[in-house]
Image (cartoon, rainbow, N blue to C red; front, top):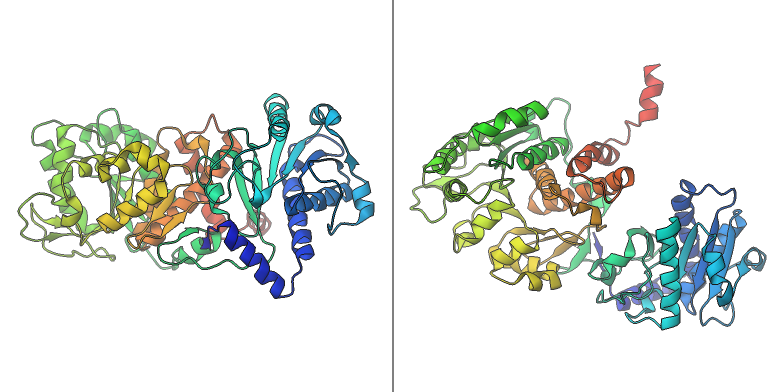
Length: 549
């Protein structure tokens, strides 16, 4: 896990690198080289030019130096590079070969509109971590002109380290800030870039290594989940295992008109690696789900109103000891049977004469009776959360359970009996407050979605996606988390791994389908490729083709 750093922490890490023998010039050389590589990778597949063209907007400080190094590198590689400087009267102490830089064309403000209309990519190297959320008007006008080209011609916009016009610590942003498609973040993740409203301007964040050492994430701190973390957490599956040993998920949800939600959760849990997924849904929903998802099994529950929830809960309690984790809530609805179900399954507000739950191996944790309190492992999502919020001090009654709650801001506000605006203002803080108050793990689904632990630590996902603003994406995330929980991951690892994997699958899905056309099912389709790369690097497709010949 990488600590989300303040400006002070980044500068301290740079000083420590210098003390280890890496000069500031070397750090700048590494940064510029990494930026050049990232730009080449971004533009290569999209540019039809024989020689791709870039315009670098270069500021007066180190960020501008990083940009000049990248421009010189690209020019050496055959790119046509133009450079426009802002308040930088000279090149300065920049580790770049003058001959390489001479290949770049320096332009003045009067030429900008013409150049902007011809380039494939515009690179913002103005401020970096020294930026403030108030742009000079002349600079804002240039950024707005660049964005017009983005809209009209599809010109790609890249920020070096951070988009200019945002605060690296607070996340405050000028509404005219540089709106990047890609931010090549250098060295360490800057906390402000992951906060709203700054996250609206970063695009995809690509973190590149230049040799800085990350400070540790202390208890109660904020960290960024990484690929290394996920590789460490993913369970290893032995060749002689079987589906029940791998882990089974029981999904409880569904209501008339909402059969898609439990279906998406089930598909996601299976794709995340659960050995078996069973849906406890109203009987009327079974044919539609079974027709489109052959791999799941069912516990058909009664339809109806009076008493249907209690009968549904009895069926769930009967089979529950066989499952390692329960996911409750997708598509559950707001009708009375749902309330009866949640009360009865979780044992909230009843006379308790036993305990209902299951151990990680699937064995019964205690003699369950109709009024037993739930003591097992569960992911609670959607209307499961809304019913919890109405059931009084539920967390006091479920202290023995291991829960992962997955609210969006409105659901979290209801759980905290707070205002939605307060949650939106500081979603990580609200999630941490809820996790500590309830003694459970909380996943907050907004912006850079994050997992908060009962100790107050917050673990943040690498990317924020506008494409996720479509029905069903929350059901997919809940299913992925439940799938990992079923495979033996504890709540912290299951929640953080689920967030990372679903997040990366969304990146792939947007690359294929686009932001506006993304469907929740598109994310499920990308889960296999993400997990193959994380878990099965030896099974390269080209290797399999060769072995089959």
